[in-house]
Image 1 (cartoon, rainbow, N blue to C red):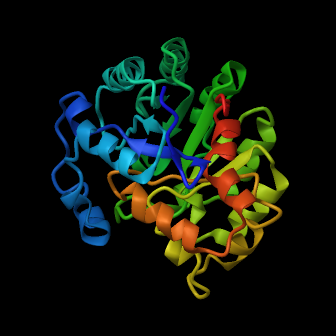
Image 2 (image 1 turned 90 degrees about the horizontal axis):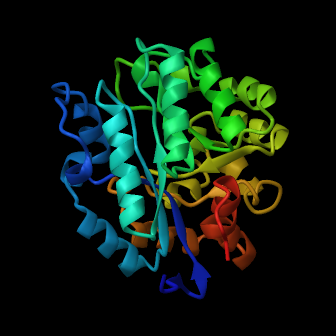
Length: 291
């Protein structure tokens, strides 16, 4: 693969979404994303293509990206995982993260999907428990965590705010990660969206558990840098104590990569911290070859 860099730095986006054109056909519940469209303007970007993604990566100097399959409503998750695996097989710039079918399926079925994801070359499993009205530390998910730990797959869990009024934020409050990280010390856990607005809680958990990583997909770094945005404890610690646990991500197409990287670069971060954020920590969290 041709080496792509930005300002002499390797860049890996820890979180992009599978382009809609590659997803299996499904019936999206009416109005499901109305609030997301209102808050994040996702309706304007949802239909971006694989060609758009590659163009964004090239323009921003992003060499690789982790493509996440995501369960947000009943869909054929086997087909979704297969689509991610096929993209990875077709293009070496992408690394795949699968998902599982959430309740009312049985835990045994979910474990089978984890095994199949691993066999297909995917490096992690991504879940959003609130969309299934499930606490992230619910016993239903424990067999999944155990299997991911056994197979050395990284567990990506949505944390913090969601913009769907029907699904409680508390399902994904970061304090629930404390139990998971403690019960599965060998499981690498990525807290997607870094737990805002529970920032102080998220910082404490990351300090307690070095197997927890904080990923900033879907967040504008300029707000992380703003003094009155609620991010202050994490903003301070990412420069030192937590610099080995922070991950650059965009949640593309929610956000394009070049402006997000520009905002990170505009912050008062050392070159070492930027390198950790943009590639070193992503490689560590997902057991990738950093070379």
